[in-house]
Image 1: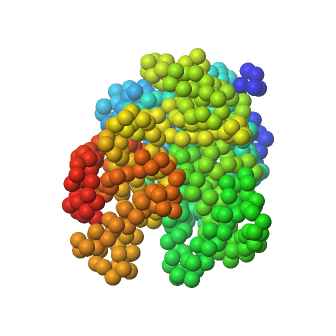
Image 2 (image 1 turned 30 degrees about the vertical axis):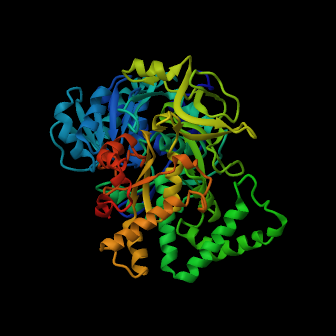
Image 3 (image 1 turned 135 degrees about the vertical axis):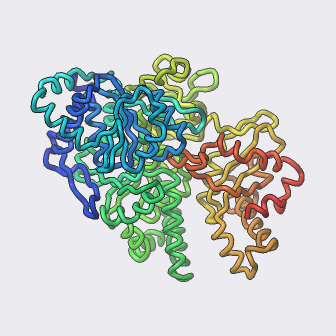
Length: 637
């Protein structure tokens, strides 16, 4: 087949031969970090492919994979693909039996691969999966009927390679660029999950496109803190790093997602990565943890930190115009260098001391957060994409960034902005983002209607709103999703994500925020408060946070944070006044993956939040509910 249309197999063969003995994988086993070369990664994939063939896997058949990120996840995917199969990567954060069952059965998976931490989920539903013939367990545990260990599969593969090596090679050569590689299920933020069909060429094309907007230096180390089943981590992590000659490390797993989160800070210090992938929820947590550490050092350090931060942000501006304040502010540059060495360097040491940047995806990142991380010397370069585009559409990068934008558009790929009638709009005007290129999915598995409405004449309709920068058409600005639009009583529409993210990013008292207006007389905001931070501030003011008066003081703080966006506030003019909330709902239940209000990439699932808080939203539209000090708000605190 032509070199211009590589399969994933062609791709892996190319780079594992180019970087043969170089380290590709880093994994902590029994307390020690191990290294696996490019060559050994390829060989493990081939051996497992032979094992799958020995099991009877035919070309085009599906294998579901549910595990935390680890070397065996990668070996298993390569094994499936080298055997001509289709990987169905499932999130290890799936909690609902129905969610797991739907994906296994809908995908027609013939085999399931599961780690020790996930096997109980599989065992609970396996009796309802008639097409599944075997479950392959990645860890050395007691097996049940219908299960085999990965070590046994590997032994079967070694024997198959020895006796039927020619059959393996024949199968490998039969795989073409348009064959399916993955069925990647949507996380369901706006609708029920759909199986996104991604071909071998979708993946290799998107990696090539990524190189047009971002580069990573030779031998760079990436710590992957996102799940490998996530399309962003899959492409921008696994395959992009392989094509860059770098290596990837995975965070040590645990019994659950919480344990894994606790392992991230330790892994960062031990791996000392140059780059990481991030999503807004993780970036916000990093900032809150950094600032909590600063506060513990006392008021003098906190004051110096805030001054240094303000100075750097004012000097950096929007990145592309960095260092060009008015001549009266010449002093900012030397102060920036001094404070960087005094304060920000020690923060970076907690990230291993050689950290260069994050690549942010998954959702929009507020411009204030982008400015913050660049100020402390660890920029988050915002990108944008969706699984249907395999997923990268654009990204900022070092030397090429505009904070507030989603970055430079990848090449080669066509893009246009369309109005509701499908007509192309000029640069600067907002409409639907529509793309065409080799990274566009093959369609939705078993869903021709959704495929037909999403891909029209080869053009993928993303369902996202945005505009192309009129000053520099290489950059795309994403403003939100069509399906999350607020609709006022007069029919006007507005995208709420910018306000929600800004409120959360700029307030230590607010963990989550959701605007609501469905042809209502005014807008309400649901606030998930940071109760410890509120209680601490109220105590410093001499009040007991457990009393009604103390809770009213907490509500006053929340109101003040919201009012910062009104006339006279520090964020005045950032958002249209008419869409600012007139009523505040204090929620009692945080958004989590377990209650379904966050998806597996920590994005808020708006429809589920609105369903969970439907009664409180309705109450907020009454005179009593509009009163800040209503009983329900006080009870929630």
